[in-house]
Image (cartoon, rainbow, N blue to C red; front, side):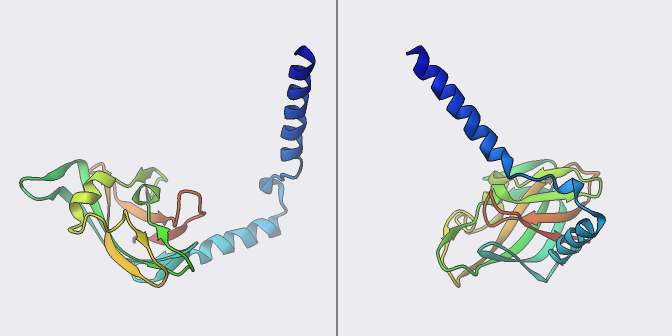
Length: 176
């Protein structure tokens, strides 16, 4: 029993070492490589009205409206802790299979780099069709809906990071 445990620990350690053996530290790259990576990141930044692709989705931000205190109806709704920013987005599936659009994977940023997550509950109230961002989108189909961010009243959003899934790299859309 003791021999088996020792062998299992040794095997686990070897696997862990093997997994890290091929990794590299990109921050130690030469200046030329960093400049190329910076250009690649800049190429991924879109503006309002411009399509931007991440994975199986093509996102087009249609508009941004902040300063909203409440979403929904007088009977059912959600009140902002600070202010709601409503971001209207068209999402088209450009892949070859259905893909679920997850509102909680979308991020917004202020000028100082502070990250804000999407308020999915407020998003239900902001979208007349509550299933807009919670159903799969088939290839070639598109939906338009609103992502909602609850941010402090003194904050102005400068960019979005939109993702086709929680594991994707995302695409940046400038809001100003």
